[in-house]
Length: 136
Image (cartoon, rainbow, N blue to C red):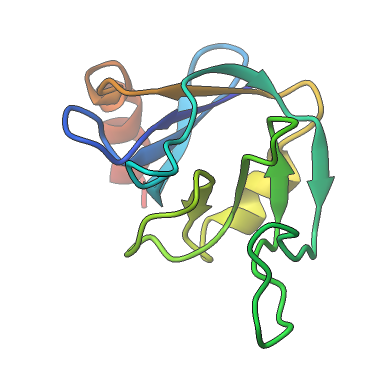
């Protein structure tokens, strides 16, 4: 199982792709990633921590409301996939739309690899996505 993320930058898709062990993309959705100042790292990372309700320690919400729900941390520096607005960029984390993140959180395990790329993955996913979304 792989969570592939094409960051939200020029030349990228600004999407996540949930890829099963047989290589099939079974779900995709919009994401936002880090600003130029807080760039999301590229690479292949293991999921190292999951937490359903979480408050950022570096950027806590003044209201006291959790701001990183469905957190799936993939770097020791604190980069994570989590629920967030897909309309504004982050401090380096990957924001996933509230409608998609519970499904990903439940699917994700500590064996899941997170691949962060600055390239478009859509050409590889197109066939699977056409088949999947035509069924709906």
